[in-house]
Length: 309
Length: 290
Image (cartoon, rainbow over all chains, first blue to last red; front, side):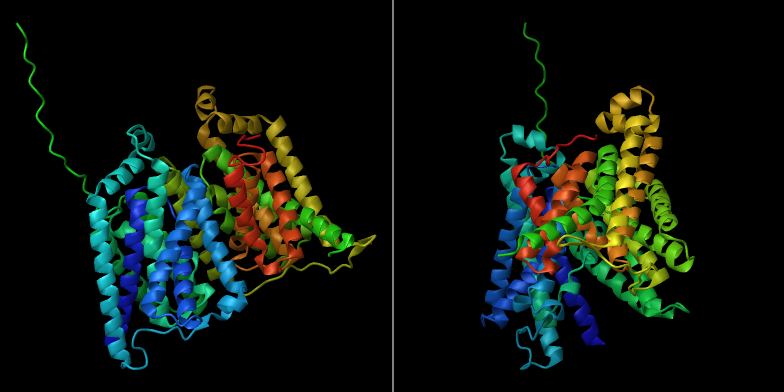
């Protein structure tokens, strides 16, 4: 039971890292990424392949996964940021599907739909399974904490302010002399880096990845986590990730008790509920349950009009 | 080196596949032209059409043409209802929010189908026919039927847009919503019409895609990349563009078989999207509704 709870916390931590990453583009910069699962997959495969085939250290694999995902994110953003945001939606969704197609078919590299197994984990095999889970939870916890602090610093920095200005009105930001394209590309790269690292963390934790793990539903989970916690709100992103994992796991326990349904039907109900939940949140709380607090700047008192004699 | 006949066969296959792909791509681009958001729910509506046709054909024993009509009407009807009850409410919040909502909607609808039909692959109940041969090139009779159905559907749509009052009103709204409103065109009615026609075409396309192989709840989602590629390559929002784009993507996907394994076929669509967005973002025919 404790192991189950710890495993739940690890996946919530990985979701939290993804939610923090997505917050940078969706929450701060107002850009959409409908294929975030693709960047997650890029990170997972990069780190898994480097550690299995090239015998890199796990930390090295994770660092490489972060960098590779950031570069891929920058390229995807470069192609689309000058266009209307709906093209970014199409390209990111297409990107995630393409990654899945490549992962399913480049058998020489990814082992196709059978997936990659035997991905090393820190201390797996030498530690007891309980210890391994705890150590991993600590690693994930530290990384999420660092990501949280970095996101908060980013928000308060001039860079974060420009991103929010771009979100609220791109033209105004451009008129103020900000290089909108460059800011968007950078934001997208930072966000993809977090997604890639989350993918690597996932791969080394479960020791097995396969293309059908990286489905669009996972993208919805993260969107839901952000909406539940409050869009643009970093503490909310973490709380939201835990809420989503709790929701997912509790439906896993409840649905088998619904009488007269097959397991496939149970899975269908579960996915339907997640999608319906997201629709309700998006409709009634588009800024999330805990909306972003507007930054208050001290307003200097208006100079009093002095009639000159 | 591939022989000329081999290349010819691939081009013929590509044109056939492209004509079928054009049907849902036109649906997508028509909805985009009027409502101004990329509607990813097209995927589930294509699947709904495929299943509606399946029920008509394999369960009720109807022949091909009534089954195809059923696919169009059911998918179109669901399209109107789902837009009225779900997506319409998101439109004031902007196209990004609406696009995300349409993804959630497509997953919800897909799971309704999965709940009813399960995950098994299902096939239509159609007679197996021998392929024709014209010189060195083989053509299946089913492919020709599909081609004819797709052609008639598109001709009907072009006629509708060019000659009927509603069709003209639709183009007016796509061209300039404010001016259309001043002329007294009711935007809500036009939204319903374009959803019925667009999602109907998606359903018809889903069935045509399924006729060649089998269908399951993911049929629509698997082809969405090619459909979006067709619409973007031709110019999102341009109906003739969607046809040109679909033929380009269809032939491109087939010709890539010369040096790629068939499994990468739908990745070709993504490469096409990236190329067009880099070189000519407005697409081959540019963004015009008609």
